[in-house]
Image (tube, rainbow, N blue to C red; front, side, top):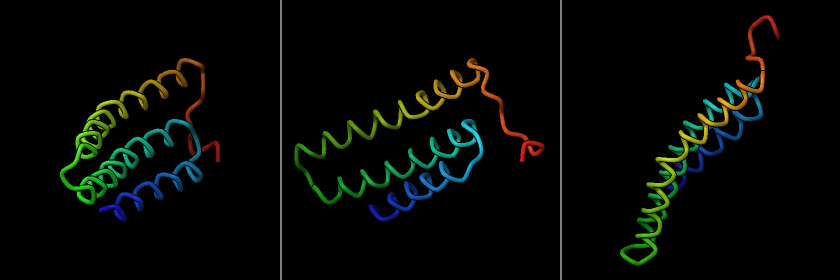
Length: 92
């Protein structure tokens, strides 16, 4: 599970480098970061076993699952309000 999570995070990093504007980058990264981090933390939770660290990992997973879309939305909304232009095919 950890390797699957690392794969998704790697794909997100490539998306940040390859995609043309902040809107497409935020869309790709918010999706893949959520999935990748949840897989990574799930694998870590299985590795830790039933300890106090499991509770901490589960809390981080819930917070990440709830806050990542909110942060991505706030980032894109602030970019839109700042006047950042969306990429179009004519721009390439």
